[in-house]
Image (cartoon, rainbow, N blue to C red):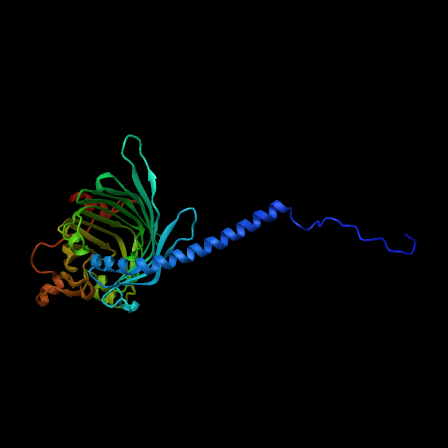
Length: 373
């Protein structure tokens, strides 16, 4: 080689290239991802084709209304919890019309079962179940995690049920034994706005202790339901002046934009799907309103009577009882028939007295409910 000749290039390693074992591993991961995607899409198509119609048919028989699945049936995407997902479920007389649907469930997910063998018992099978975006009659009923366990002999249990509706929480346990159901549920931090339009505050709590018989349809299950339901709420308000008229000063009520609520309380005994009042009370800044009657969840009919006890005498105070009657979706609120004199004085019978104010930090309605158990 002369001095003017260029030396031949020398092969040097490519510092930017990954080692061969790493490149092989990455390709393997890539192909596994492609295979997993193809498998997921294929299985989702099969699930949608073969499970959608049976699911709609079964759900329609349970709800006794047509059911339509708009989002389809597919595999879940969480590899740690393999599951089947059913999305956009609509229940109603016309399930194609979402605006008039009675029930809408955005997403229902059921995890594939895994074996669980408690010490000293037969093997059981547990499932991971979630329901998200539940709406009933246009109202939001939130998201739920439902740890379902199938026990030997056909029994089952849901321990640690957890639901969330905005800031409110629902917890509890449900048990199936033979043909019977038993539920112990609790609600907390429920805002008045979630109960009545224009409400705010209150931070209500509730407790349900119910038993029922297993049936194929919701109305039949409700018709066998028995137990007890109690509810308590604290300081809050409700928009409008309706409560101020009944038991308050008419002149002040006309211009009122809201009614201040000190507390509410209700205690119902449930028999054959009918909740019969043991004690119901609403305490406002103007009056204490006592309720009595029943709510029929089977026929979806309410028949309640509310009697106000004004806290102070005014020039013009309406004290006649108020009737709340009719089906849930067309309920009527009317004053009980009375003479003009009775309309403003409550008649000549024994008059209810307002609740005594509770000590600081106490709930007067809770004290009243506890005293009538």
